[in-house]
Length: 112
Image (cartoon, rainbow, N blue to C red; front, side, top):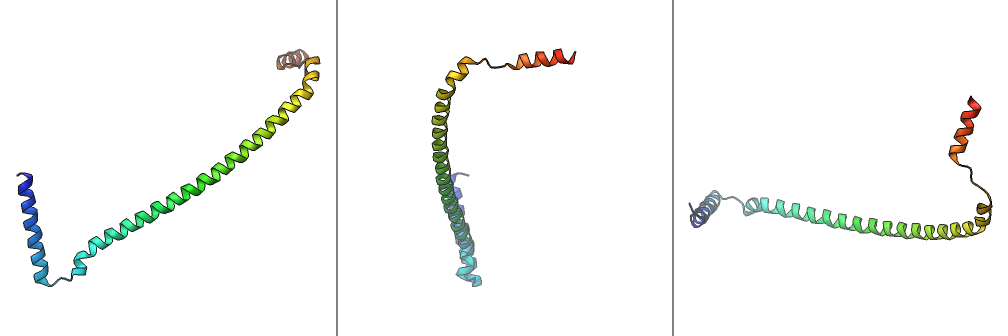
């Protein structure tokens, strides 16, 4: 069976069903109910999409604000860190920092 034959058969079935429904006196609203249900579902899906897009937009704005605040805080911290490094540079150069290895070695020698 080719597509042309299938389309003809489909048209004939639809015509028979329509004739049968009209003969029984079925209300047109009952026949259209499945379409109404699908349209309501489509509207519901559209509403959910819109709500999610709004939520996404709000979250994006909140995240952007937080990123801006954190970058500003990081900038302030970086400037303070640079200032502290300049102040402490002479002291750091004159003193030798104790290493962890020397502390571990001295702890072992005390234990024995």
